Image 1 (cartoon, rainbow, N blue to C red):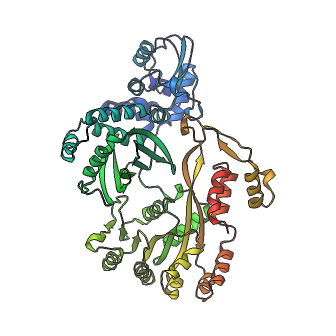
Image 2: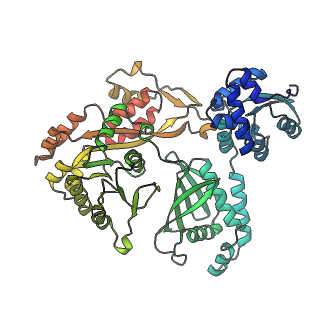
Image 3: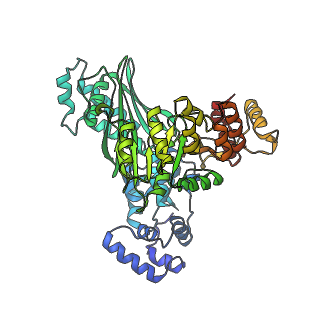
Length: 568
């Protein structure tokens, strides 16, 4: 392809009636002040979308527009262009065949970038237009630094040597040396975890090696295996960062620290545990850059979302969100809080730990070592004249009773409880010793939830169910499985070969209607369970998972995994 002619992006957009001349003038003024590219200024100002900008460029330059999320990229081809140059010139190698190479650019009118790419790649370039947002996401996904992490681990191994290092010497190797291999290793591990959307980092010493794994969309993936000799240095540095007792290796410890990764603040909750081959460390990553999800982004069915919003706007009562660890309960509660966080309401949270910092909300961290438990903080919170109280978890009878009294006496109380489904929640409260009348009077609504993985939209395809899946579909659809089309992910570079990308919620809701409350006051638990199931009808976790299968958003396998938790 011949070198493109010099074109002015603004003039192209005005000629194509995408923006007006006045909008271009304003954007150019803003560009001059900020120094950013004109295309980015236009998108951020709302004058044009990224897709619209790319399509206009493609049409005017007579080159293809490519949506990267549907393009089958090959990592070895993409890496023909080093990451530094790819990010600098906003360019991505799409295909390479013989002496020709196809390159996607966010701004193909950048002639300097074109000349540099031709010099680096030493081939004839065919241009295509891609959106900058998809381009940046692809950089993070393709240019993984597994090899560099392994190399730094080997460098650290060489520095430590074969002779056992004393504790004092090891401290000298790690403390105050920001360019030390252990520091660079951990920095790269955190950067890679954020790029891969990992929720947790697992540092696990084995007999002969140190395994580092990331949890992505609820599933663990091995990142690297390093020499076991680096384990002590890595864990020691992490304990220093978290302010833990570095001399104590026999007892579990919990801590937290903040780091800045790729211009984003990340709150890290860390837990250590002594194992047979050394201290294991698990870190939960809470990126403050992602912000809180709104309730309409959680994936709730419209009926449940509407009812949930109505109930949390009541002046009093208790709303419980239930499910096992890692099912998204805290995310749901924070989404509800974000809607309730108005100047007219005083909101107090009692948490262990405080996961997200929220503006204009009074958040209290429970500290059991100084006898600052849930019950004590909750009693004090009630004297602060709150309208809404969030209790991180109903851990015991005393906390539950105080929370329910608050719900009865004019406060809205939000909390979580570990139960399998919505129907089991009132029964669990009774088992904890909470008086039956208190459960019936205070509890307004129970929301049970799970998380299922979403099929990667870049590689989704029709799926032929296995005999076992067909039998399950037959039961769940009442024999109408033949009319149901199901899908799965083939696995691609966009989803790291898993066929899934991201997760969404699966929900069921039990509302404490008069009939359910009356049944809850009966001494026979079976009466309550029958009435509760009648009130819920077909709106169960299983049916909601089946809804996602029918919409092509998740697989039969994922729906079966959720449903198997509730087999009678």
